[in-house]
Length: 298
Length: 315
Image 1 (cartoon, each protein chain N blue to C red):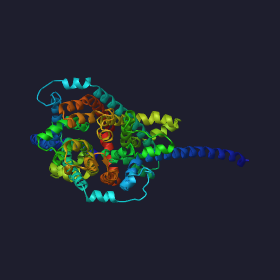
Image 2: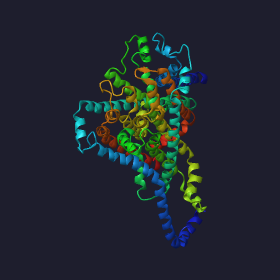
Image 3: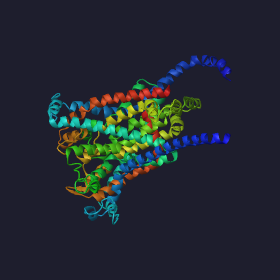
Image 4: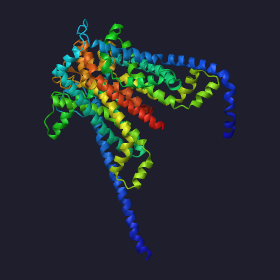
C-alpha cells in the first residue's frame, strides 16, 4: 500500500529537482555562449595582430587569400625589427622611462600616504581629497601648458621630460591606494613599535611596507601600466626617432608616407604589448584587488 | 583582566600626564613637521605639474596666437562661433555617452555571467576577457587600424563572405564615428566587468537566500537585491569612465586623426591639432579648457560616491 503512494510522490520530487537542474543547466549553457561570443570579440584583434606579424609583405599584399590564416609563416618581421631600425632603442627608452617613473612614484606615494594615513596635520584630510581629485585630471587637459613649461625647462624632445611628467598621472592614484592599505593597518602595531623605541622611518620600513606589500604591488603595477601605455605626452613632446618610446615610435618609424609596413607594425605592437600581458598573467589578482579597493574603499 | 584594566586605567595616565603634556606637544609638533616633509614630494608634483599648469593654461588661453597680446575671452568666443568646434562638442558627447553606455551594459552582463561560473573556471575566463584592457590602447588601436584598412580590411573580408558589400569603416563619417566608439568599447568594457564583478562578490549571499525564500524570481533578485547593492559602484564606475572617455585621445588620434572632414574630432584630438600641429597654443589651451567644467562636475560626483561608499564600509 505504502509503496504505491510513495512512488508518485518520489517521482514528483525527482521531477522538481530535475527541472531546477535543467534550468541551471540552461543558464550555464547560456553563460558559456555569452562568454564565447565576447571572448571572440575581445580576442580577434590581438589574434589578427599575431597572424599579420607572421606574414611576409608579399603575403600581406596578396588580396586573394583568407587574411585570417598564415600560409607561409615567417619570423622575418621580428628579425628585422630587432636587428635594424630604432625599434630596440624605442624599447629601451620605454623600459628606462617606466623604471624611473615606477621608482619615483613609489617613493613619493609611500612617503605621502604614510603621512596622510597616520599623522594628522593641518590640511591633511583636504590634501587626501585633493590627491583623489588630481587622479581624475586627464592628460588631455594639461598637455598644452605643459608643452610650454617643458620648452621653458629646455626638456623638449628629451626623455627626462617624460620621467618628470608621468608621475602626475601615476602618483595620485598610487597614493590613494596606499592610504587605503596603510589605514587598514591596526594602530596597535604603531604603538607597539613606538614603545619599542622605533622612529617613524623604522616604523614605515619595518611594519608598514611589509604589511602593505599587496598594496605596494598593486600601486607598482598601476604605475607600470600607465607609464608603459602613455601616448599623448610622448606624441607632443618627443620629435626625433631615437628619443621616442614604443607607443609613438612604432608608428613614426614604420609608416613612410603611404607605405605601411603592416607586418612589422603588428610584430612591433605585439612585442610592445608583451610586458604588460606578462605582468598581468602573473600578478592580475593583486592588481585587481588594489584597483577595486582603491575605487570602492576610502 | 577586563576589570583589572578598568581599575588601573584611570590611574596610569594621571600619574604620567603632567610631565607628558609638554613632551607630547613637542612630539606632535615634530610629527607634523615630519609629515609635511614626507608629503612635500607629493605637493611638488601636484602643485608644480598639475595646479600650476592649470592656471597657466587659463592665462595662456587668453593670449593671441603669437602670445604677445592679452585678448580676454576672444579665443573662447571664436571657438564657439566655429562650426567645426560645435561639431567637436557634439562628437565628444556622442562618443563619451555612447561608449560608456555600451561598456556599462557589456560589463554588467559579463560580470554576471562570470559570477555564475564555478570558481575554478572563472579565473581563466576572466583572464581572457581582460586582454583588451591590458594591452596599451595606443598599441591595440594599431591592430584595429589595420582591421579597418580600406583595401585590406580583414573585417570586410568576413563581411564579404556573408555577401554584404564592403564598409568604409574610417572613410565615411557615420561609420568612422561608429568605429571609434566600437574600439573604445572593446578597450573599456573589461574595466566595467572587473568593477562589477568585485561589487557582485561583495553582495552577501544571505540577501539572495532571503529573496529566494520570499519567492523572488531571478529578475526580481536582480532588480531588488543586486542593483541596489551595486548602485554606488555602478555610479562611480560610470562617472569615472565618462571622464576618461570624454578626455580620450589615443584611439581617435590613431584611427582617424579627426577625419573624415573633422567629423570624429573630440576635445583632446582637436586641441592637439590646433595647439601642437598648427602651433596655436592659446587656442589649443582654450579647446582643452572647455572640457574642464563638465569634468569638474563629474569629478565632484565621483568623489561624493567614493566618500559615501567609504562611510558605508566603515559603518
